[in-house]
Amino acid sequence: MGVLQPLRRLSDGVNQVAIVVCVGCILAMLGISFTAFLYKLVTGSTLSWTYSLARLFLPWIGFLSMTISLRYGEHVAMTLLVRSLPRIMVKIAAGLCLAVIGLFALMLTWYGWEYFTSATQVYMVSAQIQISSKFTAVVLPISGVIMLLHLVHGFALLEHFLDDSHVIDELIETADGEPRS
Image (cartoon, rainbow, N blue to C red; front, side, top):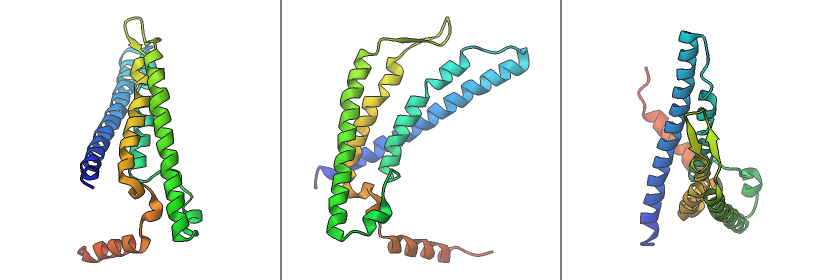
């Protein structure tokens, strides 16, 4: 257990960085779009490069948000089916689910790295702005590695292991402790 705790803290730290990067990408997209809007408002003409530049942030937002949702257990799950199984079958199903997530993360890392290293195309955002496709391709192996890192949390990633009655009791206690106006 001595190695798991630091890895879990690292996973949480990486998750926080991923959240900040996602928010930064969204703000960059909004900033680019707002600049295009203001330019159109002031000059009456459009900037041809704003849409192309803003859309380069979408893979970063999509893939990093996938790792964030995995960390918080917000992924595809068949909760009703799993909860109707006997406890031992729930553990087996959860183990299989984690194995599939791990396999997906490994494939994302492996094939994403190959895609990144072979990416040679240059996005012509405008005549002056040229961005290598490596900018968008590198998010694939990064996301795969982050997903593999999040697997150190084990069953905590899966919602079937949350005790609903415990969560409900905590919510009731929190609501009861708040002053009413």
